[in-house]
Length: 319
Image (cartoon, rainbow, N blue to C red; front, side, top):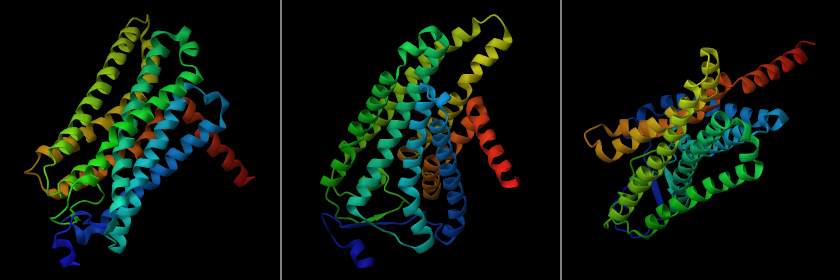
């Protein structure tokens, strides 16, 4: 194995994922919280999808966007955890080159899609609060479908150069990736070529796309806050702002760790590698776990349906 990892080659058939370098002896223990987070994410997001599908009263733009986010979270967490657990539990570190590129594409593509969904949800709240009388005529099912299609196409097209560029680089150093999944920059750094195109492009996508998305979200919430503070009573202001609380919490749980991880990966050269990898894993596992919890707790319609669902099941069991 060691010979194959150091021999010169141009197109590796496989890469070797280390997992979390320096913490190999603790891989089994680390897998416990990761598995727990994934199980909660799967259960929570499928619950959201089931409830929205089951309840006709929830067939509204806000909940359609919520379902899109649930699907995105499921794909993101599922794209990394099965292989990660095979490394932690069975020391199965080899990953096929093409599978690695596929994993890389899905991770970054759906991360971009999720950012676009946040913008769509902010627009939904803007229309609902600032122009409520025209809400049903502005956000029709056709408009929601077009927004969803635009989000998917934007993420798919912007990230497509990632694997295409990775595939064309020669790899003559090593095929060992010091990571637990095929993260773009971690793979590109193995190439023995001038990788500035890949590095600059990925950095541009991260900052330009997220920067524009944050700008549009900020503009939406500026108008929303103006509308809220113009309401006559404190109760009305709190009630209206409560409809935006879950969305703001979800945005914070996603953008802050993502930005921190991206900056740390590029500029935090003095920080331990283990911390880099742990944070990179956490920002793909923690938000999918927290999103359904936040919406389940803070969104009255979903909270009521979940309580009703458990009450009905409890009555059936004890009847």
